[in-house]
Amino acid sequence: MPKQPFQQSQRENQRFGGRPRNPSHSPQQHQPQQPHQQHRGDGTPEISVVIPLLNERESLNELYEQLRTSLTNVAGGQYEIIFIDDGSTDGSFDVIRGLRQRDNRIKCIRFRRNYGKSAALSVGFDHARAEIIITMDADLQDDPAEIPNLVARIRDGADMVSGWKKNRHDPITKTFPSKFFNFVVSRMSGIRLHDFNCGLKGYRAEAAHSLEIYGDLHRFLPVLSAMHGFKVAEVVVNHRPRQYGKSKFGAGRFMRGFLDLLTVIFTTRYIKRPLHLFGTWGAAIGFVGFVVDLWVTGEKYLYNVPLTNRPIALLGVLLMIVGVQLISIGLLAELIVRNTGQNEVYSIQDILL
Picture 1 (cartoon, rainbow, N blue to C red):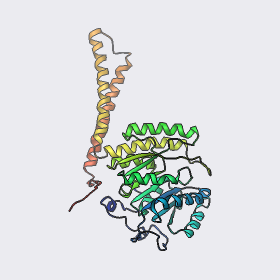
Picture 2 (picture 1 turned 30 degrees about the horizontal axis):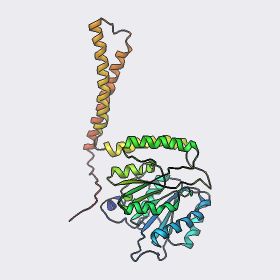
Picture 3 (picture 1 turned 90 degrees about the vertical axis):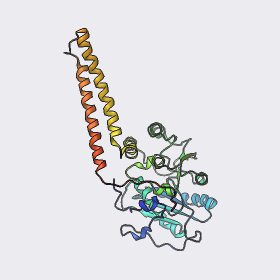
Picture 4 (picture 1 turned 135 degrees about the vertical axis):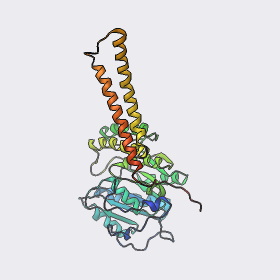
């Protein structure tokens, strides 16, 4: 699925160890002029913090003060904070602009409209320059004091660290669906985490730049990272009650999450071998239909049970037809994959030349 028009195609460079191209070279993006950076000699920060936000004006000043304290402890002055304003209408951008006048390590990318958290994270990753990237929400429920724990885990060897809000301060209308969602995702993906959707995460730059995020796939970043071969870890983080604004959680997001899970599993496991998916289910369903009809036919000849008024016989035929159709779909998908002519893209850790 193509990226949003405001994003750049930087992934090929980054998969092979290169640094992302300067976003200012793209005519579709604008980046404000930067004063001299308070970073190390080469101008590259040690930590980038990417913060998507939508209408969080009241929390931004307090969030910045907490971030400055935490980041100073773990990285000195060598950090950058990248706010992604996802179409806010409450004046959040004006607050961020005021913060930038005080601290030139603050950056902000403002969307003309709301594109969603996945788009915001993708653009934030494109602009992040540090070797360690932290993501968090702007509502103050994610505690910036946990950043040193994420950074330490990455420096110990993890490529991606996901926060676990073990003690959540949310209403049951959010916690119960979230627990059920995490349980299903963990079982279906094989990635044994307790909290996939926590906004507080840490990434090694190589892992973050390898991710293709669109739609609502931000919920599955640990799954995508693991399926790219990166080492995923989990740490318990402090979760705080919401102080300002209101939650953006809704029942529609919950349902879309499960549909996106199917997308993740199919595109990561079966995109190059669709017959393994459709053929397996088709063969299983067809076999059940065959056994049902074999049983009905055996009763006909052994016990003289008439086939009239035996709906189960029709069910068996239906199952065999569905099985054949699924296998046929798998074969057609295989032909399409074999004839697309696309080159396989691999995630490479080291190259020796």
